[in-house]
Image (cartoon, rainbow, N blue to C red; front, side):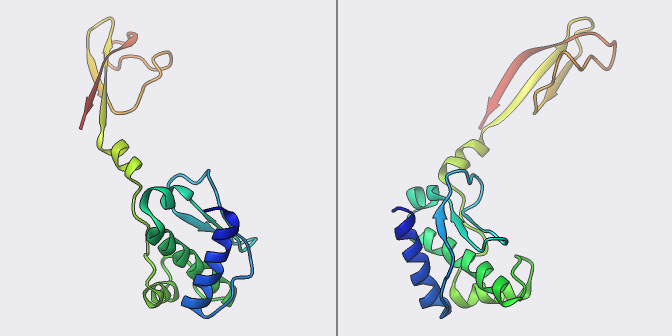
Length: 157
């Protein structure tokens, strides 16, 4: 699917589900990472993450399009278009759109792996366990002010 066929699909869903026309532009945005799509307030355009179509299929894509069209139509009507607004929640239920999109399979794998880094002071041998990396040039041992060195990296599932 390319941008022109996405545009036609969005116009069709807008007319069938909302009874209103979609007069702006819909396109795929490859840079979207953690969201299925977004509605741009200034231009009224809709951008969709193509990975959701590739990995989860057309049914998920249609749900994302309906969700973004809820933002679109409510914003143009001057009603509550944000996730927390009652108008938005009611319209989502009416058209059968999801409030949040499903997680991509590739992101699930990344989140299940846990990493623990073990640092040790070269002077007093005090060890520190951290989830995030430490800049050993900047930080020193809290006990004796000695230099820290990374000694181990443990990865769990």
